Length: 85
Image (cartoon, rainbow, N blue to C red):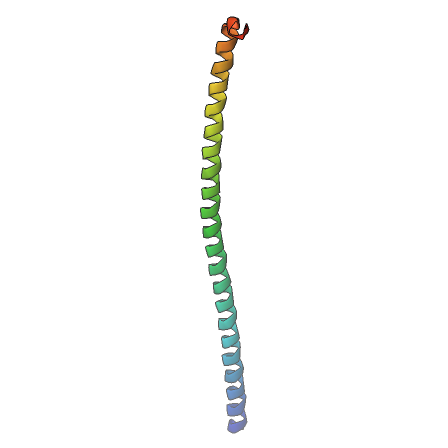
């Protein structure tokens, strides 16, 4: 009887070891995917910041041009004689 119990214990230990390896493999896959997701988010943030900075520069340029046009229109409206030929 002791021998049968020993085999049962060995089988149980084998099953536990197999389950432990499967759990470790699952955890490894999860960890790898979390790292990949983190790397993607970091790259996405950097790309987004770069694109937003570029867009901000373009908007600043447009705002300056608009201000210049507003001054020119204001000047032309104040001096209608500029339009007479």
